[in-house]
Length: 452
Image 1 (spheres, rainbow, N blue to C red):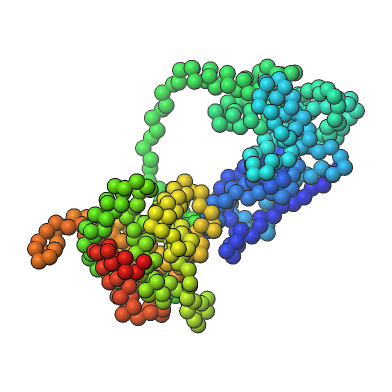
Image 2 (spheres, rainbow, N blue to C red):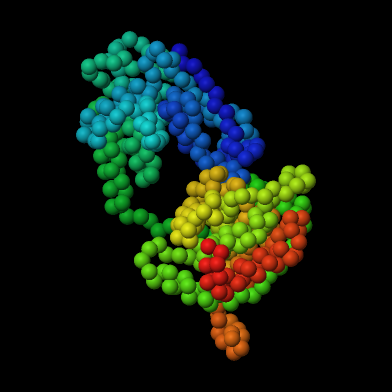
């Protein structure tokens, strides 16, 4: 008899107490492999897939999509076959071999055990019930209905359970799901009516060829009042910003800066072979040099506020707008990277923020933040510090403005820089010195050569 094991939501790190269910990746009755992701959850840090350490049949799921589950609460239960008996996963493997022989598809190396470095979902072999739709067997002896057993034999005979869609292959199920094909409406061309990949592909082609009726015009949305609950990332951001505003005596100073020479330098760099250098990468390089000159700003307060933690490495966070809202990815060891390397990592993390694939590790551990709010078309801001960091450099839009240059009025590319800092960590002289050094590097990029 199988053993039912309960898998609880693990601690996902950083002291998180729970996570919100975004999307279930498995269904009750589905056969899963060891370490297969079973659910996608949203934490205060990122959206992550949670793998289950057990392989077998999913017998229960806990929590609906949108519901928050506490760390340590049950997530799924799995019926695990005993080691000495033939397992459900072996049955699925046998079924896959039946379909592979019928369709002459690519060879499959096992179904129940994942190959190293490869993932993928194992679709359930049944319909809504926990009983598999197709049972591979050669022995007429009765077997338990809930946990069928496969007896190895030279030949395989496929028999179907009435009223259940005869599909074994997870590849076929996934193709049907992605293309919106109802498997129950298909007649299988395989042995004993088994639905094959070619059957789904024919249904997709017929669906594409069929004329489509025009969609009805939806009525205009009606504005409604109501309360939107704070959940997931939005809740975490609200709590963090509230704590920062409540605990940190933050001060902001700013300066208008002529960025014409910096833009000329960028165009010169991008005119040579190699990766393109962004303005953000140049500003990140300026920040790392400025923090080496003013190391007290690369710090944070202790939890109880009794001391200052000085950080030897610069882990540079930067504000990025993603599909989940504003996030702050972190470039690790930014001080040890070249300008090109900074640009490549900033680009990679920006893309991950846009598609929502940032990991919790990529969103934590920052020591200083660069906030480029100029991408929103604004000049200035007084941002709230990213707790527990002690400082943040803000950069507005770079725009052509009249400017006195070398004693004459000229049109120059001007940017407003703002600097917000924790007044407990330093005084205004240090903050002003940092901001003035950054502005000098923007106006005269050659200044950086003295520091490199």
